[in-house]
Image 1 (cartoon, rainbow, N blue to C red):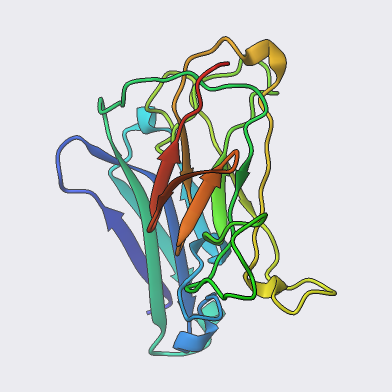
Image 2: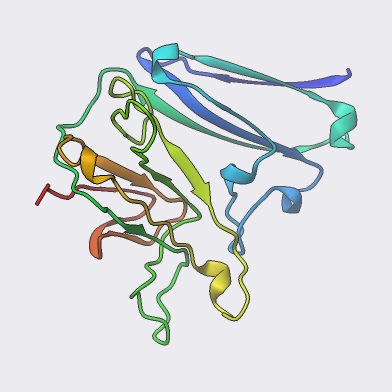
Length: 214
């Protein structure tokens, strides 16, 4: 054999693939992971993205064995799926929303949660600056015209011995878009706590929050 064939398959009716992340390595330690040993899908070598309207239920990957460099590889696979037609009740999103998150398993007494909150390694955020802005949800495509942005910041930083576990992502909604109605969703791998405009919006691996239009 010359290639390794890996296929994501959805066999539950009504569910579809919106993202896949795949990594193949010769050892487990070569799979991108944080200092706690948790995989980081955003750093995997292979990935795909789809609108839910594409109705994707299979995603094949063909990887050359020569590019892997070993006969018994380790495989890490991650996917985001969405069920068509399941949309939560919209609420108003106000101007200048700020989502702040970081990552750690603990809250050291010497390092309180303010101003950088502890959460995960990547955050989905909204950007309404592009032409014809649409709805934003964690599952892209749940609303007509939905789109998303995935961001990742480096884990190392000069001048702060704790910077490896801090992550912060801020975003603004332009004033001309204030009158839209939407629910703001945020995802963060390995989240402990996440905050929106300084208000706790949840914990564990999936959180969401909304702010009313003042």
